[in-house]
Image 1 (cartoon, rainbow, N blue to C red):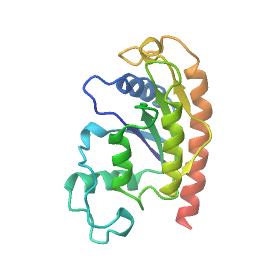
Image 2: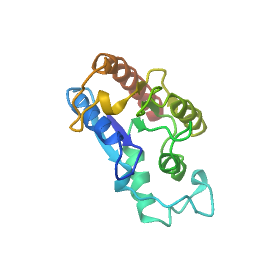
Image 3: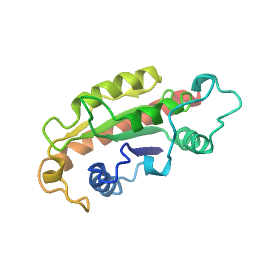
Length: 189
């Protein structure tokens, strides 16, 4: 089973990088699935511009990066999205990456790891992303992580400085793997 972990910020000074380091360290201990980090810096997608919507593109994308992105999304059985919160919502880069593909997201589970430099842990961004996921025919699971005060919580190398996130993560992993297996079985039928 393959779970793609999407790092949803491309800023030069981004707090999500420390979150992704911590998360990938924890996920490396899980043997039931393969977890791959997809950094949106490696997929510099322009704002969506195709003439047709992604669900009706029959001849593929005119953009090579979008073609590579769609292939990566297609091979995953589920997703974990690491997201900041900008102005009480998800950032444009992550939203645009979601918009570029459609069929490749369908019938796959998704969970979120929200983070913020202040309180709240990007809860409003995650709530909006859950609605977007439903529109993409994904299955957003109930469990998620909300990391507040990320600069004081996770070190630059991914070490947890404080909080109970190491104890919370197994529940999220258990749910995403259960849903990924169930939906993969259903997709294969």
